[in-house]
Length: 149
Length: 81
Image 1 (tube, each protein chain N blue to C red):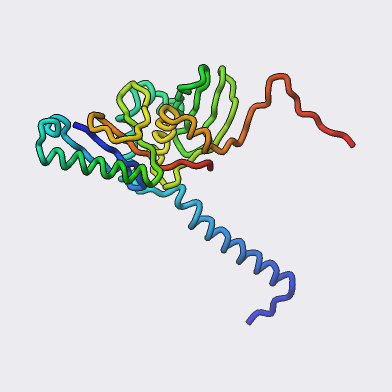
Image 2 (tube, chains in turn red, purple):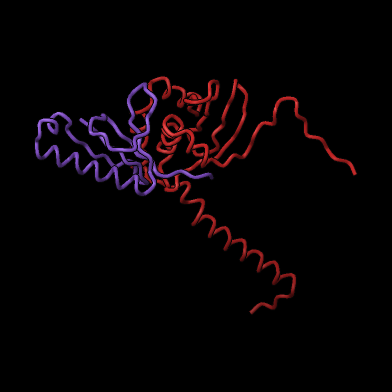
């Protein structure tokens, strides 16, 4: 049996804690986000293609995102990424907001794209009410100042 | 044909009914409509939202099952990430 002194014990404990945290994070957060079986992804992709117009499908393939106009605010466009991520909201061509909305159940990536589109087109108030806004563009002319003591 | 697509982890589940045969009173077709309506209501009770979808037309929210719809898609409840 090895004799470990204080710093060595501390280092060993740190490594064990890191491995434990990584394992739990991977098991309960990372894998649920990443894993849906291939058959499910295939079915979801088929449904998405069935619902999207030809132009929308082409945009998604070429740019990696789908643009959906707001049904209530003229000039507002939602940019939905093809893979799970933030939805960018553009107003008059400028990034106005960035937000995170996700389903309570795990879904294949293509279903998530379709979920955003359907919610924006058919239930925008609820979609915005649930969204977690992670960025808002400050009003025009406003500057952030550094405070000196 | 009417279709109900229920999004889930395994990809969507599809329920199909024959609108014309149901209108004509065909018992089998009427049973398929009732089954689709039951699943629709069950999904809404769980917090899902249902949309009528059609090519090149924006989706519209459905609060009640519509057997005349060609395609209905239900999406699970959403939340801020």
